[in-house]
Length: 475
Image (cartoon, rainbow, N blue to C red; front, side):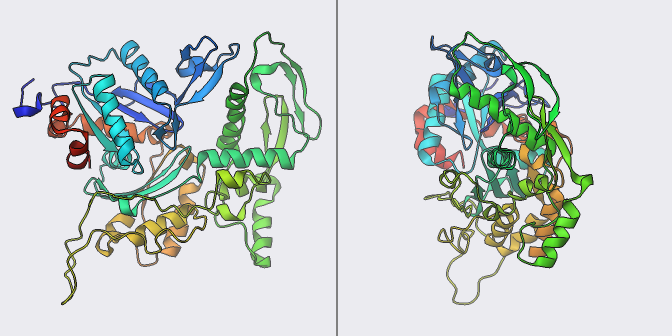
């Protein structure tokens, strides 16, 4: 390993084994740069016992008395810093056997991080873990590298959020990025709303509480024998287990309809009912209690909420606070001047070239934008010279994007709303690759031989300070 100037060691892809950390709202992934898959794929949460002991990974599934389930992340941002540090250290030390003196780390981050958050992130990894060098990589940039498309539009439909980010030459256009919370957890909450309103007497007993069961079909009551427990069970543990029911229903039952289902046109409404309210579309879902519920047209309506959230209000009005009408426009007070359009000649008398414009409507229109509208708005907001290339390279990723027929619906709606553009979607068919796409992209990026110049050493951090490296090195 050679040294370079005041910045300490130069870290080349062939010389070192960098660590890649991708912490999402639902799942955290950690592994070695250059590997095809992460070594660690665990929940972004932990269990805390009454002895204040923290349990990480899938060990948190087991029942313990007074065990609380504590989330580490929200909206892909760390909210429990102490828990995050302990979780990462647990896997760095015990599984990956990280050599903090020799191995740098690449950390993915969403585009909506603010300055204070990024400062804390950088300071934590330099000072708490003593990594010799690190790099912050925007999640959409990593995804673009995984796909080999340096200029693209990354549509990431994850657990807590759905985001749309234009990437040009590997740089995220922050001003033109969009994000809503109409994503995986939003669907889980709609599934809960559906089960409790459509089947008012349904038994949602949790799997770990059931000793044995006899299958029944609603409205026949559930027939099971409950377990008895000496342990004191917390509400957070039950909530954690309950979410598994809604997630499983979402993954096994939901299917995206071809077009918007909520229509005021009686003819269209009748055609939709005829197409989806058919015996062939009905499916049974078995709950942990052994009781099964039947869903037909509702399987499609639930998935349609991603595209038309305003048409599907919750019965529980407290959900209006959790999911206020959101047009997806990010409040980024001082984004970096990430891109300047160079191709288009200025008209005589016009002012100087300006950065990529922000969305035309600003943040005044607080309508609930579904996924297709979010993408169309992002495309329309970017420089006109970029739109053709961006529209031809739309990457669809994230666990929630795996719902059947989601990409077909996106293609149809985007083609209709952007008639002057040739729309092309790129979605990996392998579910494991798609859900780990950001980590895999980070692995590719950090293992490149040319990436050595991107690492920011701890010596440079100590010399230049966190503000300077954020503005000059982590753009």
